[in-house]
Every structure is written in C-alpha cells, then in structure tokens.
Length: 269
Image 1 (tube, rainbow, N blue to C red):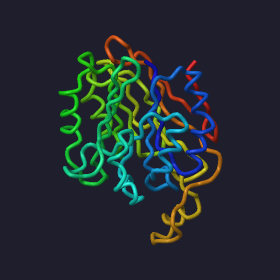
Image 2 (image 1 turned 180 degrees about the vertical axis):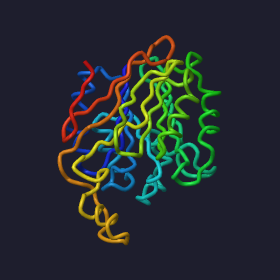
Image 3 (image 1 turned 135 degrees about the vertical axis):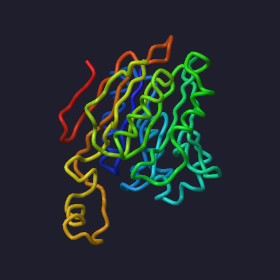
C-alpha cells in the first residue's frame, strides 16, 4: 500500500500547492491513501467546511488538525457530520468531533489517529495513554492493514518518544505543527515509518507560513501589531511518502516529498 502524508496546509498558498501537484502525485506514485493536516487551511487559522472540501477535491482522503482546530468557530457545529475530518483524540471527553478515522480502500482497512502533544502546547489529556487505547483495540494484522498517526506537537523529543512508543504497532508516525520539515525520515527498529515533522504546504518565503514583516516586528517590538496573515507566494507541497507491507502493515520505504516553491525539490525515485 502506498500512502502520502502532507504537512500543515497554510492558507491559499498551501491549498493551491495541493491543487497544482496532488492529482499528479496520486497517479505518479500510485497512491492508495492521502492524509493532510488542514488546521491552518483557512487563511492560516483553522479550517472551514469550504476549505475542507477544497482539500478533498484535490485528492485528500482524510484531514487531521491540531491546536487551531476551533479557530474558525463554524466547524464546531459541523465537524461531527464529517467522518474524514479529525481533531486530536486526547481532547477532553465531550469535545465535538473524533480523533480516529477508520476507512476502507478496496479490501483494506485503514486507521488514522490524530493526537496532540503537550510540551509547550495546550494542557490536554495524556497523548501516550490516548494512543495506547487505540493500539490495544486497532492492531496491525488483526483486522487493520495500515495505521497512521499524526502527532501534532512542538517538542521534537516528545514526538520522537511517541514514535518509539508506537514502534512495531503503527505503520507510520509523522509529526506536524512546526511548519519546518525535519531530515530524519527513517524506519524504526520495529518497522514503523517515522519523521519528526513533515513541514508545511505553503509559502516558505515567510515566517512559518506567515508574512515576514508583521511576524518580524512582533519579535523586535515585543508588543501586538498587525494581525498575522499567510504569505501569498508560490507554495511548496511538503510531505512524506511511505510504502506499507500488505502482510504486516509495517513500513517498507519512507521518503520525503517536496514540490514547487522555494525548497529544494525531492521526489521518490
């Protein structure tokens, strides 16, 4: 099975990058399933039903999110009706939406988990316990053909710890949130594909996707200024490609994918 995880989609630039490149990637890489983190898709802050539909129309099968999920308040009333749109599983009990998605592609059962880390982030329930509760009921080789986890977090150490915690029990663990791709794509000893952060889909001539001027002034002046807004140049589609063993559900191959914009392009050979 061949899958693609796309890092945080930031604003119009990120959405345009998906529209320009994802249909080609689905064909060229013979992709069976695509997940994208969409928590910054709506003008850099949150996601709406409209922007979610744009991502689906580009070829995204499941959207994960993170700490910005409620920035566009309209999604609070509609997220329960969209089984393909996830929010972190370790939000408190009673929060709208779901943190796990179960999908069928042909005869294969795919599970996607969205979890949020806690270091330098909001105080949520224990992400390790939340992931463990899924891994004990959704097991590779026992009715699950692929299990992918988006770890939305700030600290690389915490994301790495979750990756090793899941090793051998998940197909793929990929981090999101930092908007900067890390260079540590690897297969862990137990067979789980891992990268600390997939980066973002957006304009890299920016400060993590936002226009440079106002972002720089916030650091220089240490006081509120112009509202941050997404940079509007050509975006880079940035993500992780993985090939999953159909017998074990573990990763056979993992490669970074970068197309367009300012970053040096890379494509699985």
